[in-house]
Structure formats: C-alpha cells, structure tokens
Length: 433
Ligand code: PHE
Ligand code: NA
Image 1 (cartoon, helix red, strand yellow):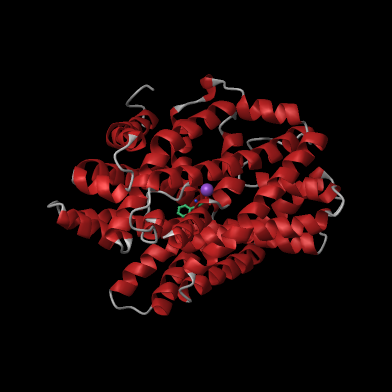
Image 2: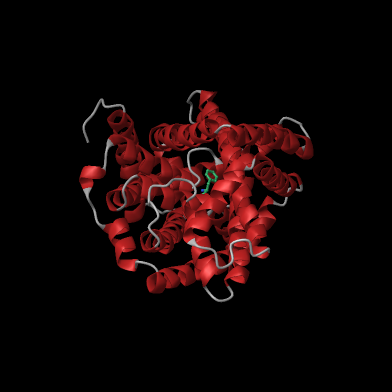
C-alpha cells in the first residue's frame, strides 16, 4: 500500500507541476497586476482546487477506470443517469485542446535547451535576450520542429504504456527543480530588484481585480492542479484502497503552489532591474531567466540543465493530458499505440495551428483554462457532493469522517460549486463580487 501511494503521489505531482507553474503563473500574474491576483489565485486553490482534487482522486479510485467510464459506472451504481460519463468525455477533449498549445510552449523550452547548450545568449544584454525570444516566435520552422519533437516524446511515453514509470523520474526531478528555483530566487535577490519584485507579487491592490482577473485566477487554479479534465481522476486509480486522500492532496497542492510562487519570485525582480514589462505575456520566463543564466558563472551549464528540467516537467504533465483519452479508446478495443498516435496527431495539428496563428494559441489557452476546466470541476463537485451516496463518499475518501472530512464535504457541496458559478457570473457582468 505504501508503494502504490507513492505511485500516485509521483504521478499526480508529475501531472500538476509543469509549465503552469513556471511559465504560466508568473506571466498571468504579470498581466493581471500582481498581488491581488495572487491572493485570488491562492483563495481558489484552497476553496475550490483542493476540494475538487480530493473529489477527483476519490472518483478515480472508486471507479478504477478511465474518467468517462468511471463516472458513468459510479453514476449508474448510485441510481443516477449514465450521462454523467459525458463529463469525463468532455475532459478528454479539454485535455487534447490543452495539449495543442502546451506542446508549443514545451517546444520553446526545448529550444532554450539548445540555445543554452550552444551559448546563444551568453553575456547578452537584456535587449538582445528579448530579441532572441522574438526571433523564436517569428520562426515557424523552429517552433514547428520543437513542437513536433515534444509531441513525439509525449506519444512515445504514452504508447509504451510507461506513464506510471515516468512518475518515478519525478522523484529526482522535483528536488532538482526546487533547488534550481531557490538558486534563481537567490540570484534575483542579489542582482535583481528584489524589493520591487516582492512588492509587485504581494502588495494587494484589490482595485486591479476585475471580473476577468478573478476568472483567470480561478481557471489557473484548475489548470495548475490538472483538475476538471480527468487527469487526476485517471491517476486516482493508483491510489491504494483505504489510505486517506485528504492529506496527500493538500501536500501535492502545497508543493505545486510553492513552486509557482518561487518561479514568480525568481522572475519579477529581474523584470524590474532590467526595465522589462511585467505584463509582457507568454515570453516572460524566456526573457527573464536567460538574463540570470547569461550573467552568472557557469550560467550556460545551469541554463541547459534548468530548461531540461522544465521540459521534463512539461513531459510528465503532457502525458496526463492524453492518457485519459488513450485509456478510453483502449477500453473500446483500439490498440494503445494506434489510439496514442491518433490523439497525438490531432493535438499536433492543433499545435501547428497555434504556431501559425497566435489567436488560436490564445483561444485554446483561454477556453480550456477559464471555461472547460472550471465547468468540469463544477460538475465533479456536484457529482461527488450531491449525486454519490453519503456512505459511499465516506468510505471511498478514506478520511474516516474526521474534521477534515466534514470540512471537505461542506466546501465541496456549497463553497466550491457556488464559488465557481459566482466567478462565471461575475466575469459575465451578471453579478458583482
Ligand atoms: N497542471 C499542469 C501544469 O501546471 C498542466 C495540466 C493541466 C496538466 C491539466 C494536465 C491537465 O503545467
Ligand atoms: Na501546476
């Protein structure tokens, strides 16, 4: 049991920690004005993300199948309509849509492995480093090549059926990533404008928090924890029979949050020390961190290693984006290799569209994170909170009815669903938060 609990922890952490933490969190924090956005994001992790994550792991363990089949079976057992399976199916599509821009960004990270290796940005000025990223965005063949490499890597792992196995790489990856981020925060504390960076991230000016910002903060809580599309549900099947889900989930969410905050604390001091714009968008990580690597001693070596780690973290997330769909097709008698290649090809095509047209990239990111994942999460919260019988939930959660269990139950039934609905209505201007 001990062993399989770790299988779950490694797989779920591998899925959660990825580009969402290191690339996306800092750049949207920059775009939506800093501190108040960070608070909104943390509140969403706590009040919506963690309770929904527990619900997903629980359903996955109870259903022991791909998300669509698991929800369908659980619903039927509970005397509800089998149509609940649609929620799992919707999640598979959302996963595929995320893969369509995720692999493009992972491709950028691979490009920066090569750039670090060849010393392309060695001792370069901040301006040159900015131009460097702009060049990559201008180069369709370059992006296409790396996007293809990353898609093939993901497909290779999934087709070989070693998704569980790569979870073990997380064992080495996470401590290294953590150490690297600490090193970078240290660098920024000494050579960046640390005070300005921290003020930006943690001063809370709530007047900057409009409906859109709150929606993006909530969407990111789902995205960063891999929720609302069945990835965590699929991994829940590894969770051993009667171990408690609550504490494990809280630990994973805390780790994910700390990594995101460290990434922000490494980047923003460099933004302010080098007169860059915090809200410059998706290039933030690729413009700030190379400044640090370009100047520190041994920087190219560290840069190579860091972008390699980021790429591996992206890989352990991307496999969980297509695994649910592959598992579902496999259950329908389609060979694993065939279904993997099929889904990877669809995702690859979407990635090509994202490279060719930035609007496609942005739309895929926006629709999945801010609409599809919260919607999936809303239905999962209602499903576990209201549709599944109390007794079943109590035994399956393994939380023995203690205080943590009772708190989770209330938050899952009321706070999370009403919170999601309120944020949706607020962003549509139909409700004033
Ligand atoms: N959580 C991953 C990240 O932060 C992205 C992801 C989203 C993975 C949804 C799987 C499902 O990078
Ligand atoms: Na994450």
